[in-house]
Length: 310
Image 1: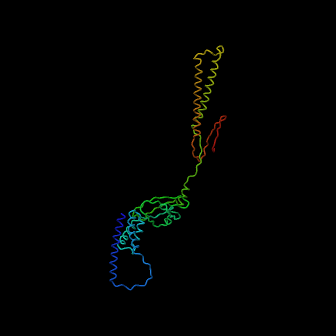
Image 2: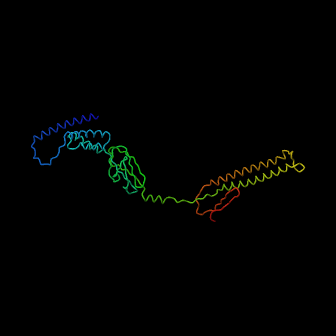
Image 3: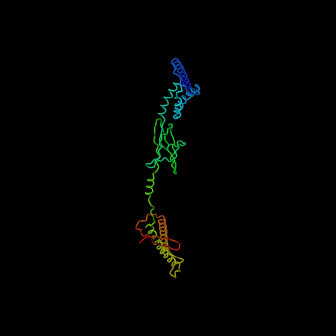
């Protein structure tokens, strides 16, 4: 493709030279105006000028196919100058207008509520963009671009945009909370509500059951020990030891079993009471400040307390 472009440019250059030679002959045949004195200047080498024009003509096509539109437009402008051959110049003038319509652009805006903020730093694709927040159009090549905006004393905000060829003045807005919004959020923040942990009713029920069944177990256990003590006496003393019948021993077994069951229920109730006490939830304290009752257990003592306003 590069060779084909070079060949095309060479043909155009040859045609341009032929046209220029014909124009020169026509100018020699026509009457010349009287020249005006001008300061002497060093004329540019025609070969260098034509070579540059051919190179920019070719580079415009290559960069345009790569969608490097900004560089392609610069090359097209370079080969559109008057010193370039007319055939090359006509192509470049047309291409410049077409590429200029295809170059996308955007406008970056940083806002806090209804106010625009310009006191921030911006970077586009990692490169500093000092005038990005001045409301001016920023021209970029088509494709994906990363925009970073860093307000003073605040974290960087990042946006990714994809620009299509011909997309003009796309507005990219970064929003910051305004002072009024920040104050409103602070005012709406709920105040801390004092809480307390009342003793659940189930704790009292289970604690009471533990005390009752422990007492019942103690009664049955004491009775079983008393009956056993009687049976262990000699027959002349009212006992049956060492030859007691099953009917005589059965009441002792029944009392012992009742004591074991009572103590088991008391232990289970005590464990349930402790669990409901230590896992009781916190609830807000009402305005009336109700009276709450609390209790505590220790190896050697039990404590009961009242809290609240009467």
